[in-house]
Length: 336
Figure 1 (cartoon, one colour):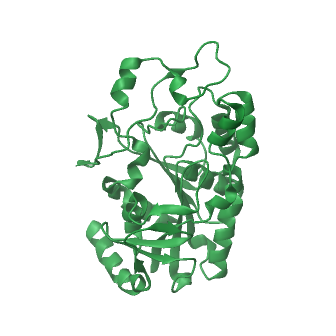
Figure 2: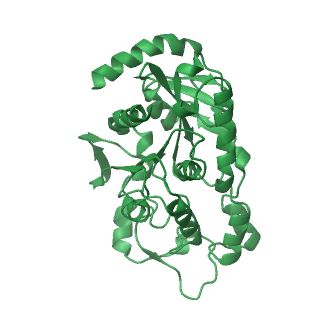
Figure 3: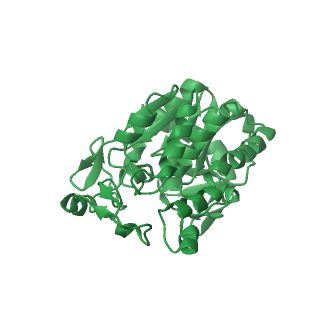
C-alpha cells in the first residue's frame, strides 16, 4: 500500500511541485498549498494552482480561539508532516493540502483580553465577554469565502475537504453541520475548543450545537490522552457526547506507553506535554480566578505523573502520524 502511494505521489509531484517554491525559513502568510517530502517544504502561495479541476483540495484550519495572520515558520510540524499527503493520486486527481490563511478575519478573544477587562476569569462576566467576541462562530463565513474562491477558479465543491486541529477541528465539523452543501466532508484532528473549568458553558454550547445537526460527514481522529487543558476533551468523553451523530467515522489513536505515545511500533517523541486530563475542582469561596493554576488538582500524584507525558492533542504534527495518512486518503477516495 505504502509503495503504491509513494509511486503515485512521485509521478504527480513531477508535474505539480515545479510550480512551488521551497520554503526554507520565515513565516507562511496567507493561503498556501503545501508539498512536503518530510524534510523539505514547498509552497504555492495564494489560491491559484495548475489544473484546478483535477485537484482535490484539503483545506487545513489552525487551532486556537483566535488566529494570527501568519502561520508560523515554514518548517512547522503541520506543513512538514501533513503536507506529505500532497501529490497523492485519487481517481486520476491530485490531492493537495492547503493552509487556510484567512482565519484571522473571524476575530475573537483568546481569553486574555476579557480576563484583563474583569481582572479575572472563569466567571459569568468573563464568559459573557468571550461569547460576545467569539470568533469560532464566525469561521464558517471565512471558510465559505475561501471555498467559493477555489470553486470560482475551477475546483468542484465535491473535491474540496475541510480539516483542522483543535478549534479548527470543531469549526469545520460545525461548518459541515450548518452548511452541508458547501464542501464534501470534514477531517478533524483532536477537536475541542473550550476552557478548563469543570462544567464550562463553552463546552456545553459547542457540544449541544453539534448534537443538534442531523448529520456530519466527517473522519475524526481523537486521543484518550489528548492533554489539552479543555475540560473533558479526551476521546472517552468526546466519543460519548458525539459518537451517535450520523456520518462521523472515528479513528482511535493510542494512549501512553511510558511517557510517550507509540504508533504502530514507532515512538512519536512528542515534546508537547500534557496540560490537562486530570480531575480538577473549583476553589471554594472564589468568584473568579486570575490563573489556570488556581484550579485544585484532585489527585496531585496523578497530576505530577501526567504532566510529564506527551500530549496526544499534537499527534498530527509528528512523523509517527504518517501511519494514518493512508486512512485519510482512503476516506477521501471513498467520497470522490
